[in-house]
Image (cartoon, rainbow, N blue to C red):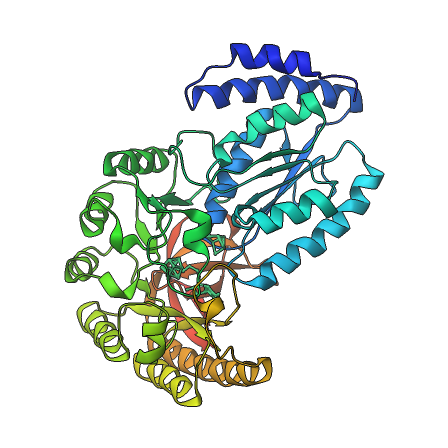
Length: 475
Ligand code: SAH
Ligand code: SF4
Ligand code: F3S
């Protein structure tokens, strides 16, 4: 590429505003000029592809990153044959990392064919110094690397890359400021995640999230509400409040939920995730009294053994979890409880595992994500003796999965024959005369209907349960 120089960069840096987000809007403008020039040279629009790994936090971050890229002038694309490819990575289990390395290998071939292609990496995996060292050394075709604390700086880093044509790496050790109010490109026009807090203070002994996402930071309620009001004005009807543990929201989570309920236009409110240790009676009451709040609580159990839970640093026991699940079910009619489970935590015995199976039976989960324990270096559990051999863990995993599937499909039966409100999300992937949507309980429903219902709430009769989902008829 013929443009860009260190001198030009120095000059621009002198005129750039120092405060955020003004500074980023400035770099968005600068990048836009370059992208426009490039696109004229190539005689076609430039495309950008953002690939997201991991949880809802990353999905939300990706919407922000795509928003910035669109402002810069890139056209969104789902193909990795794009001019700009960004992986927003996850490192919660080792498997996630292996996938990223594998795909970076494939991207190398694409870049050989299109040398102007820009490859960027961000997200949780980049907060680990070994990862960044490895990429610097063995994946030289990567152009931009940033972490979880500075995603808002994408435009600045891209601009630097355009000027210097060298690998840009900026990883911060901790959050410096919460920069909001940058553009965001929603995946769905009618539903949207909203961060209420970032980071995590819980240090569950197996988990890397507190190390890569830092300490808890709660956004001011008024900022959150303001964002939601804007979204509602823009046609959003379902909101998902996001935090690693929304129950420790610094300004009171039940109070916040109540205020979100009061916003006209918002018809359904979800939240993720609730830690069982501090789910309050106040929260249960607010959910019970507000039909707008989804009849769904994701309440990660991790293990059913009180001994393992103590080793995991979870601050609840088998008994207290079951009591809580019972309290939720008896107070909130028709609520669905879903969970996360880890198999093969260090020192887990067959007896411990039986406790997990026991809780799955008793709590009657509506669905559960099951994970094989993955050792994450830097966490306390990684140093624990008695790591469980793979074959034993796999065998337990299969037994657990079978039970979870059985329990969930049994639970699904309980709504058959009822009418329920469905938020229609998309055309059915297999049969385009069908639509797919979700119940308040988060169960998926397929039914016949016209495409213009997408994004609307409709009433559907639940004819038949098929494992985790329903077949229905619109009424
Ligand atoms: N903040 C959420 C969880 C975020 S991580 C909570 O506490 O509920 C999502 C899930 O990944 C966790 O609930 C856990 O089940 C799983 N997980 C986290 N670390 C893991 C590890 N080292 N091995 C296997 N699963 C893990
Ligand atoms: Fe990880 Fe525990 Fe924090 Fe969830 S609460 S993100 S499992 S440390
Ligand atoms: Fe993964 Fe980071 Fe989420 S490690 S699970 S993307 S917070």
